[in-house]
Amino acid sequence: MAEAAAALAGRGLRAHCRRLRRGEGSRRGWDLQCIHAFYRFCSTGMSFESINKPLINRIIRVDHAGEYGANRIYAGQMAVLGRTSVGPVIRQMWDQEKEHLKKFNDLMVSYRVRPTILLPFWNIMGFVLGAGTALLGKKGAMACTVAVEESISHHYNNQIRALMEEDPEKYKELLEIIKKFRDEELEHHDIGLEHDAELVPAYSVLKNAIQIGCKAAIFLSERI
Image (cartoon, rainbow, N blue to C red):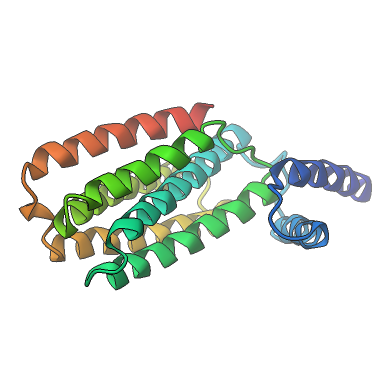
């Protein structure tokens, strides 16, 4: 019975992997990634029936969207400021965001979560936000970083509380991932402050506007 259930889950997972495939890399590479993610999930001793699937779906979907958007923001900043003195600082933060996105790509496969349908929109808006604030100079880019990373850190804290209330032992691996990423987002937030984010003209207005947008993005990405 257990083998039959695993086989059925494996077929469903492979179908999900094909839907997620975006033409990057070879078919064989994607198949190996999907199979590895499935057996890695099974090795935790968890089953899809034992988890709160609606909660996990929301968490992984919105976190994937958030890390995707953050990558696009840093891409926009690098397009404008990449050759300036602050370029290496932005690059360092962007490299960490790439690792975050890669991890959530893996988790989406492992937990069979579909991405938000709004990814094409976040693709454009993230780049525009990053490039637009970077056009204000280093301080503008860092103000954007502070606003976004503060929003993401607060959001991660809410997820940590929800998982702790649900079952901290069952979701131990996911909790460790979110806590690690939360701490790294807070580091980015502090880097922004260290690089004069608060000195950009109308800092409070800019920060509040960006954070309103972040809240709307979180709300929508959790649901669609």
